[in-house]
Length: 275
Image (cartoon, rainbow, N blue to C red; front, side, top):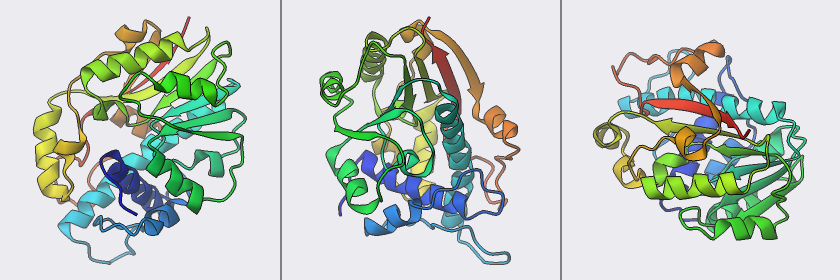
């Protein structure tokens, strides 16, 4: 199966979740991630298991393994928000190869929006979900997805838990604003959103990551920095990635001592509630 664009990232994230799940101090347990990665028959140069003590790794493998520690933190952050949410419905914007419907005891009706090829891969690989899951094939870069969401049974009169995990960097500034305005229009009072956004000079860092990782990060990232809290006008709280990691007792330092810079761009996590 061939994946393009964000599909490459979806596979990379599945591999990272598999690595995190194999660690003795894991923050998540994703029993499906390795299967999703393997079933795609991809040539992405990524491991799906943490190395055994004393096992050698290449510089590129060390980079990807370091990155998996951050993905473990990020995944757990959104896991906890959904598990703690009292909303009757939740929407994963750009769900990718997410497996929360299959591995978490979620109470919400869960809508997953993404490209058809990504959703189809999950349909043919994963077992039945543990919650009510509705897959919505949609292009989040245009303005038609709210209609697709409504057709799948979404109710804008009910509070919603929105999740935009790792999504905004793949949209340009105008598309980010358009997406968030749609979220606001579709949200009843008491709805929440959780997202992460890149701060600082993303383009320069992305160029360096492309060379080090072997993955064209510059092509994947649309670039541009917006302020979601201002666009939404909701009550918002932001937290740097390092602070989120510290809450989980996780250091984001390079465990292999091969790089001074982390293999991800500077990120803050935002949660917001609509008044």
